[in-house]
Length: 374
Image (cartoon, rainbow, N blue to C red; front, side, top):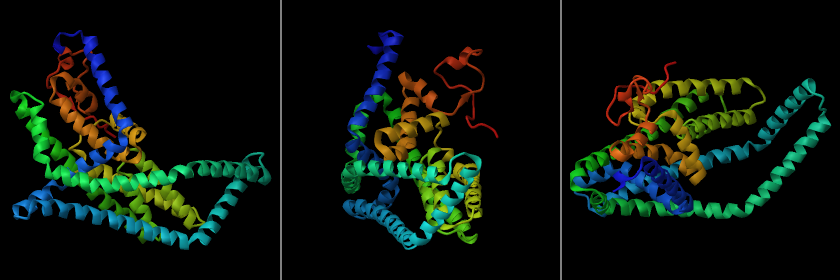
């Protein structure tokens, strides 16, 4: 019936559908985000679950054991950060002295190049500090609610993961019943490819966290940078957020280095080591692990990160890329939405569609890599 509608009506329905999905995610993000997180973790745990099932482990135990492994991994991360924060607290007097030294140096530099004297600078800093304190007081009331929300989020994850693995066959049958029998081979192919991409992506990210922490933290420790492991772990985790995370990680690395030293050479060293490790990660290591599996162009990867962050905060930013990858798989196998799959992908037409009409049609075309050659 929809095939008989005018083209403008079809496209309007598509856009309204996308807006409705975004609206539902914004309104129900507290319910939807734990479910999405559990879905991706469940797929990552499927190989362990299937291995235990082949070894004739009871089904309930085959589900619980992988969940316990995830819980142990999260507990180790929490323990590490708690330990590092304890070290920072012990070093607080030295950190305070270093920060004071840097502020005085900055103040002297500003006095030399501008007409602002020390008193004017101190008045400005005091005014901004008061503004920050007032903002912190206004946000303090919502801190407890946010913390409780995090605990609810973490508490629901194991339950959702268990139930998704336990009832996976019901969920699969539900998906197949949505489509005609003639389309079931395409649906099966899409399910297998979705599982493969999500597993390779998430497991690849875990491998990335490991080697980036070892490389970055190890090199910084060898050159004598304080809090080297903390800088390595923070940068490795933030680097999971495409494009934006690396920038934030650089800033945090610089700030941690400035608080632990009164000289500038450690800052230059940290930035240089981060640039070197990122070069290895982007051009050698990551493309071999997961880069070739997720064909999303940079424009929509960045848009996905910002949209995910505006919808669901940090968890939305982390989940943005795998969600966009799953959408692309679905769009590529649906005739009505194939153009959206082309829009999300990085396979550029070999020639301009303006001059070659064959590249305007919904059929396979010659493409070239979307990655810009440097």
